[in-house]
Amino acid sequence: MFRSRSLTDEKDKYGYNSWDNVELEGEDLIKAIEKVNRDNSLPPKDTEKESTMKRWDIFYKNHKNLFFKPRNWLILEFPEIFSDSTQRILEIGCGTGSSLIHLQDTTKEIYACDFSINALTHAKKNSSSQITFFLHDITSTEELPYSNFDAILLIFTLSSIHPSFHQNIISKLSRSLSPNGKIYFKDYCHMDLAQLRFKPNQVLNKNLYKRGDGTLAYFFEVEEIHSLFSNNYFNVLSLFKDKRLLINRKKKLEMLRVWIQGIFCKEKNNELENRSIDNPVRKKLRGYLRMPSKGYKSDNIIRHILPNSYKKVIVSNIKDLEALTSLNRFYCAQIAHEVGAKKRIEIVCRANELDILVLNKDARLVSEGKE
Image (tube, rainbow, N blue to C red; front, side, top):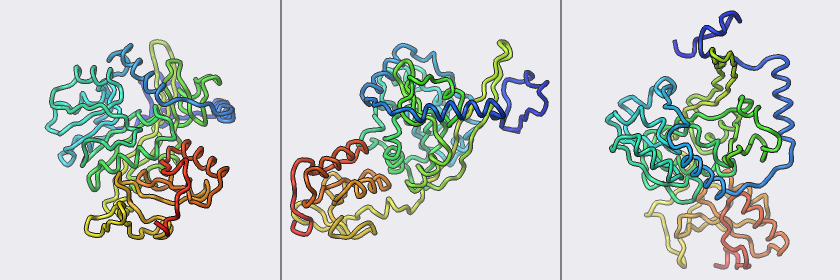
């Protein structure tokens, strides 16, 4: 049975290449906790998004399709992807196609994207012509060019992206799923061997590291992933730590790996859909569209939907601004007219950190009530 290989006798350790549900214990566990706590106590460092993206493109240019092995475990971990009920599939961050190799000979409608041109070039060479590849930066505010997917694969992709983008990415993927569509997720978990191997000078922020080639590695905690998807109106169908002891029998090496894995189903009638404005109820008002109350603040504070589909919220302080991060990317901020210059600067700086659009960074506008 899958995931049933338990190590009960140390003498049997080198009998197989891997064992299930094995984790750090005793002195090794204490040392690992101390190491991660030291890393997370270090002062945070800045990293540029453009630089990170460029590093991944260079990585795929140098390694081509030789670095990542075919993901033969995909059909065992996520058998539902291969069922008849799942016909339209998208992979985010497809790389050179190590997951797609198992889907390309099916009758399914397969899409795959990456922000690296070099990765897509190699993926196309490795895959059949029936797969639709496209270049896309999942961290951008630009919507995906395709939608209505039954399944989205998010496998070892989110950890390579700065955590400040994670909330918006999941929200964006939700809008591309069909009702009851699912996201199949697997990535690095907190306290994985890879995290324990990083040196202090590679620490950027809590659980965030920069590899020697300039790419990022983030290590998730279970509660963090649960909140990330729940806040974007997904039902958590499964979520667990995949704890494995991998054995290199030739070199007598033991590697304790910890990954995080889950399946998340989009709620059919979720709050994100309830916030949308149907054409019959839209009313033009001086170039804007009046927005009915949806339970967040009042009609005088949030009432307009802009031509670019953003909904405008009046903010008076940083606390108002930070509340928007729990919603979705369709909300943008407009600083209230009575806010002073000093507080305005603080709000704008914080908005930049949170990647929230501010409409009036440099000017004081009239109040919503006088528009």
